[in-house]
Length: 118
Image 1 (cartoon, rainbow, N blue to C red):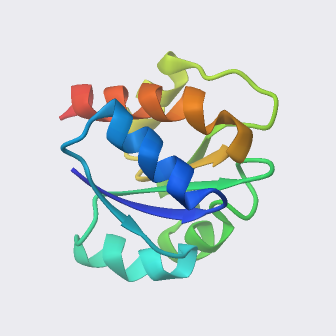
Image 2: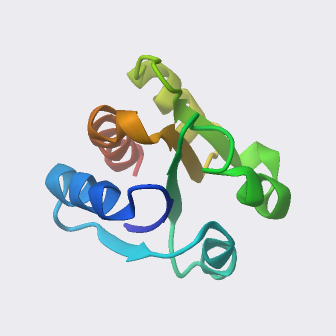
Image 3: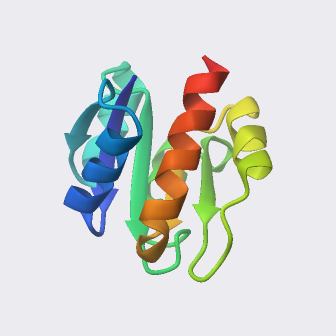
């Protein structure tokens, strides 16, 4: 599995991904830099963080990849719901936004759901 990382707290996001599964390949980039990586298959997924989890974390990708492939897995102050994340993955989402303060809670759940979906 290959994950592009953008938005706020990129090093923290990468560390959380590696703690969840050290075999995942990560690429730190920008939101717009992730678009051609996703389109070409260079990466499988994009994880982005911002203040809200649904704004700057994924807005460029919504516009360029399409709303149907993007979702917010953890809003600012919100809960991480494994069932909702599993549904997003089943529905074909490949771009995942989260509030930067939820990285430590959301990433392990998201990584586990993606691995289980393979």
